[in-house]
Amino acid sequence: MTLPFETTGTGAPLERPRLMLNPAQSGSEVDVHRTPHSMTSNTLASPLPFPYVSSWIKPGSLCGVHVLDTFEAHQISLDLDNPARNRVQPQQLLQVMSSCTRSAHRAHFPLVLGEHLFFDPTPAAEPFLITSPPLRDALKLADWALHLVPTGYKIELIEHGDGAWLMFNHPHIDHQDNARRYVIECMMAVARRVAGYLLGAPPALLAIHFKHERPPYSEQFFRHFQIEPRFNQARNAIYFNRDILDTPLPGARPDLHQRAHDILVNHSTFHESPVSFAQSVIERVSQQTDLLSCNLNEIAQHFGMSSRTFQRRLKQEGRAFSDLISTAQCALATRWLAETQMDINTISARLGYQSRRAFTNAFKQWTGTTPSGYRERVAKG
Image 1 (cartoon, rainbow, N blue to C red):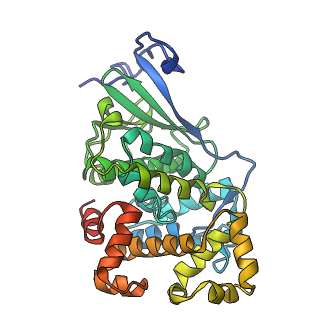
Image 2 (image 1 turned 90 degrees about the horizontal axis):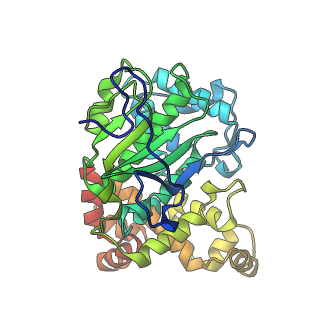
Image 3 (image 1 turned 180 degrees about the vertical axis):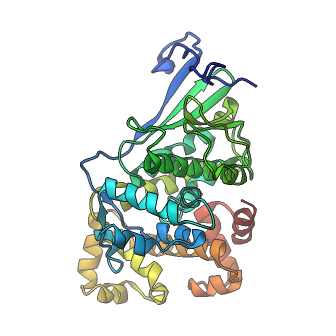
């Protein structure tokens, strides 16, 4: 099968068809058009907010890498007690990526990192995905995910005939630039997990292309993507049937999708500013689960302020106390269901619910599915 934009037999790229930057404004047919989903990551001069070092620690453990030691070896000081203060220069993060990948002996670190990098620190990401009306709406996640990787990376959706490409690139990458190549591999692993949620496991992908030469660890790509990757190609890209983009998804829930969207938009991971007060409350409650049973006055005292000041701070950010508790409960519930064998009755009790039925109803409001259904989905994909 010859795919659009594949290399020719001589290794030269095929001629790119005519592009249409805004096809919605024209009635004429075109061979290829770029969708509005074209995103570029942070600028080189800006240090990256790095509040979620835990999203690196877990993949490191799975790969046999001591991530914290690696950061320290690169003279990066991380505040684990107040991770919202962490800032890392993009070049430093690339160096850490290279070191972790070289040290990994159980699995290829960029692929494992891609499975956790975006979803672990952002509990609303999965509800946003599984309630998306079509896949095209879910591609907004790519924009947010770019805020978690170093500078200059770009994701672009190109549609051509019956097919579509999700392309990943960096303007200064070459075949010897291992660090940036690893980030590309990580981003493609994120895309694979997104596709797995929406299209089934393994997802219905037609091709995986990489610009670099076949590496010694190429068999790990097949195990991860469940499809034989092609190397020495014109672009880093995932190819799939175009009609998938607009096919209605079975879990579509516009109301829950919008709620998850609003949480993601306000999520501190995607802003250069420090973590908001509301987010700091959510994180503290998630870390100290005994606070779930506390009322507003008691949590305000825990933060060393009066209930009036506490409420004023939340009001300034447009948040309600009950919303913060629900967000923390959702984060804990999805984590425990995915990462532990804790039974649902125990999870319900630990989250402060009087009955499993009440917890199930709340969980369905958060994610659009039941706790048992969520656990089964995670186990399968």
